[in-house]
Length: 85
Image 1 (tube, rainbow, N blue to C red):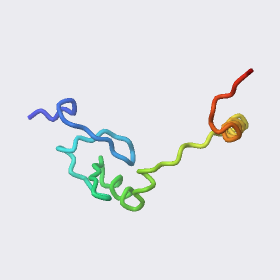
Image 2 (cartoon, one colour; image 1 turned 90 degrees about the vertical axis):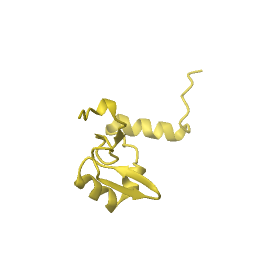
Image 3 (cartoon, one colour; image 1 turned 180 degrees about the horizontal axis):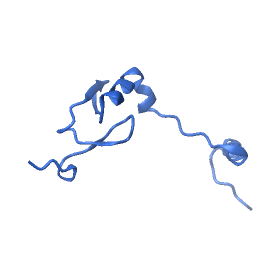
Image 4 (spheres, rainbow, N blue to C red; image 1 turned 180 degrees about the vertical axis):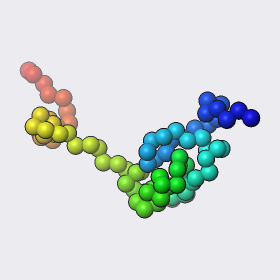
C-alpha cells in the first residue's frame, strides 16, 4: 500500500503549518462546523484551548527604529503608496 502524500489530498495543520494527509492522520477537531486536521495531539490540544488565536492570527509587528517608522508612515497615509510629486 502506497501512502505517498503526493497521491493523497493534503491539508495544513493550523497550529504548526505542517502538511497533513487526512486519510492517514485521524487527529481532528471541529469548530463552528468546520473540521481541522492536526499532525500531533499537542497541536490539537493547543488549538482547542484557543482556536481564534490560530484562525485569526495578528500580523507580525515590524521591529526596530526603521520598522516603527514605516508603521507610522503607513498609518499616516492610510496604507497608500507615497507619491514623490
